[in-house]
Length: 166
Length: 326
Image 1: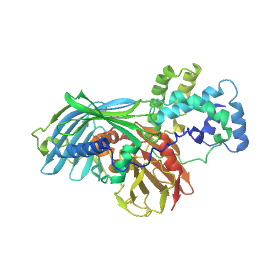
Image 2: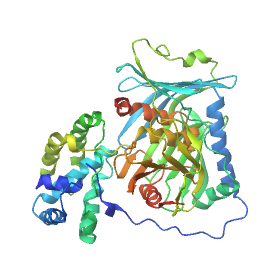
Image 3: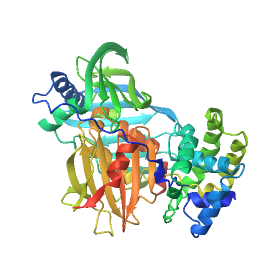
């Protein structure tokens, strides 16, 4: 089931039947926590951890109101950077550990699930990153850049490990 | 893992148009624009050294900054004070990032300065139309008496800003971006600063040779943006945003068709829209965030469209989702 949930999120389920079955499965005990926990990991890997607490609410609303929008999107290419996959394991475990404290509406088992997910599925956790090329091109034109001096470059350079790996 | 759920769309705060566009630009908005221009000039023309702290929800970074203006030429050195050593040197029209642990120098053919065009009268008035601009009190920042300014958004399509400037030189000492709940999404400030230091270009020299012999020098193939018609447009722009640039990113090797970049601004921040063929740098769809920067990517036929800017997630999503062929 966990595998199906993950594939659902990644848009990798083979057909509509599988999507329907997995969605139905979400009503089972624990499945919802897994689903949520994967999203928490995704959110935290993508950037800041603050959205995490909103995930369950957003998700509940999404499931209640618009089940059809869960239909998977066509699969996108995997990133070519291996560096992020490695970083993902570390980041997910560290961040999920921290997040567990702040999640008031999550069962305790979610933490264990999250750890498991983080370590076992690091290769499939695909953090959303802002491509360095875009970041640079944007920073060059953004009016906040001249005001903030070198701040933007600081950001690029400190988070530049990903860029180095390219 | 990707959060491929368009349902995450939240209700976009609908913009309530104010009274008819005021003919005269409000004085405080004029002040505020002068303030932004002055801050940019001061950062470019003064000599200063200081410690910078950069903070976002996920952590704090500190760095040391040395800026020299020697007869109109700028020399800048920035290195971080925590984590693996990183050093950024800006001089001679390029930026070099040193990564001593990896023995890599990354050379960016960009200067990150002054690419933003001057504000048009229309944008000047829109500042006051989309933000409530207030001159705040005096408080201490980096040991100096600083003048506070607030830009409070009037709709959900932009973040709030708080700025603190040095009244004498106009240089920006602290800047904050706040979300709709008043939470700080990103903050950058000088912890200490020495203004008008008597230093020359040597003070901003890299710790290592320009290109250390046993290091790898990497030059990303990303070229400069070349202004041109792209054939793309954004059909549903959030109010107050106007196009300030349209270009193609050149010199990416192999590909003749560089990504299109459209830039929209409300006078305070900018949102870039990148339209790239599949196989470009953006391989994901959905949202991403880095401090006050939000990104939203969506696929359209053979293209991946990405909106990226210092605006709330809803704003970048609205922009990315309404890109069309002109």
